Length: 446
Image (tube, rainbow, N blue to C red; front, top):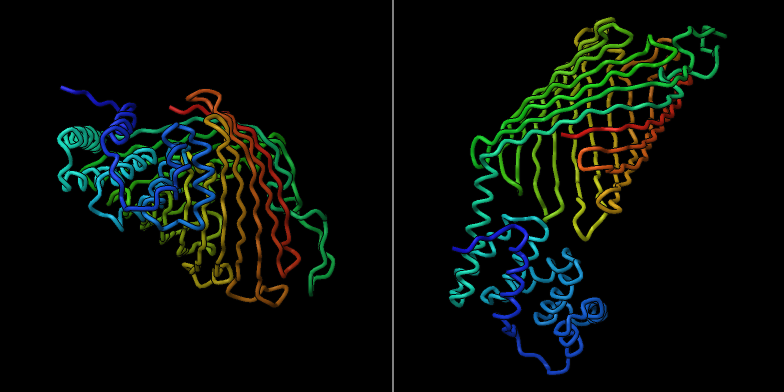
């Protein structure tokens, strides 16, 4: 009995394809791709890729060229380009075996086992040669066995992090000790409204458990929390948590999530707020590494010190994500969101806001150990009623920038440096603020 291991599936497949299936797809002129074919035959793969790129604009769409182009792309690890070309070949030549096997090979490289299994099954429908049939059936047995094992396996992830940093406006205060206000004139600000700077230490942790119930159903529970201590202004120490439980339905291509979360927040040793958040999210995979998702968040916020600020918040969001692959080192995420707030009490109407915003997050994987990341978001908040002092509705625009770098010291130990800049511009001068923060964290993952 043959034993197939994850490491040698792709290697064995390559040998079978090269030695057993040299079948031309279409008849072409003898010299059209002679140099490209010779470079592939001689295993001069970088030169073959260069030749294929030069021929692409003129010959892209020709089945024979698309196939050779894909071979050169696979050999030089350009799997996204290979996927595009082979898709086109298979669509136009659905009954030819070799392109489907190469397509399965690309899906394996991109870790899309579901798509690879589909292509292997299509190959079996084409009645391949006995040796090919035996090999493909062995792959299917191995891959489906892995999927079944994964279906029964629960997943647990956890981490503990210790960090230190500096915050130059931890209370979103103003630089000046006094401000001129309409009707009131020159007003001296309270200590809590003046900008405060301090060093801090932070201890944080998170954990997640997921258990598959059925083939396309799993339940999960997660937790994350942190305690931040400021050296000089302990009245602003923070202790917060996020406890979440939910269920996920679907597979790699399409899934839906329903969850309920509890979020308490303490400041300076006092219980400041807590909230319950109901989340409904649907995700759809456009391609191997591209996902589109839409979400709805319904939050019930309770303010322990000022009951006027109790409110219900509704946020509708959409995300488009392009994940990194072996060939593509960049990942991107675009986000849009709209929301509204409704106070639980009539006296709190002044705190209601209309919310809209957009964000972009980027990351660059330099190698297995190092990743850089950055993000930018712009949010707009418009209050429902006129401000009692300025006699006009408050409108805030907030710009947030994040830049950082993460280093994997070992398989379980990571070092992360991040900087955070936030600036709020309001039509009411009292609410213009700037905040900068830098943090260095070391985390242990288990």
